[in-house]
Length: 367
Ligand code: COI
Image (cartoon, rainbow, N blue to C red; front, side):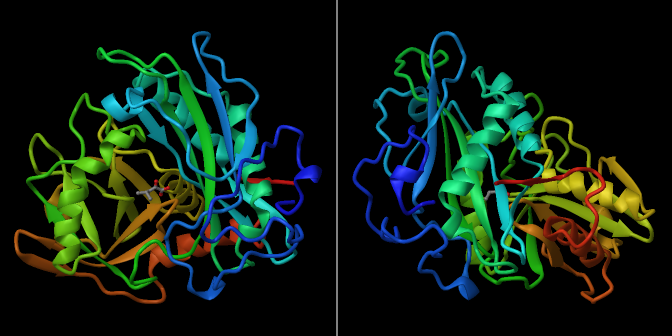
């Protein structure tokens, strides 16, 4: 499909292709992009198309269109550039062994974007519009979807205040845009267990803030803490609550779970924690498998007695934690093949790949 614009929807427009990894537009739909599929990480690659739509005063997004992937024009006074009025989402398209392509719970991303938009005073696309945009983006970039078992097409919906505004107020126009990129492991170390650092001075979220929604403003403020931790050899940072500095919240890029016996615990999402879709799915999987799940306040000290700790996220997947460093003390976790997180992960992947029955209708085929 990405090959011939005439076979695409009439909504396609084709400004000049941008450079870099865009493969020739004359290649066939089935031709895969020129990528080393065995060594995918989480780096940006320009794919073929992105979906774009706008809305203004009426708050209703018009029918969108697929444009060639490339730069977008924004006024220097766009709301998103000046006041950070923006949200993003992340979801993935997977290719199965028989070539069919599936999304995982995309309507959950749509709902989360709607909740975030309400918090950030933005209009949002309807669930159907959102899911349709994600499907169209995946299909238009089909040749960038990794072969079965090699990774996924990471799909990034954005909702931004694109209209110009000088005084502090909601933007007069909004853009909903979806682009995509093939990805493998999120962390540079691949699937090796994560080494986390508990940060006590920099907080990701505070009560009444926007930590519970996927606002773009939640990310840059923790870059420094994350960069420092990485410079010291850690994989990522685990943040604690801003009031008591006593309860764990989440990692820069993912949620966190503790295992103790048959009980799975994760920080309760009450405005300072992003309700991850993988988090939600792992909770359901654990309950289905007969484990007890607790969403509650978790003291940092509980990390010392946990049997197992793992992280979840769309980008990250399900990642075991090998160590956590807190106040200079390194807590080590035993990594073994019979860890619960591996059991949960293989069930999740089994559902995504179609080898385990999708009893909760999580999977959406896109063709
Ligand atoms: C995701 O998991 O989709 C995220 O948005 C995390 C991001 C920091 C890559």
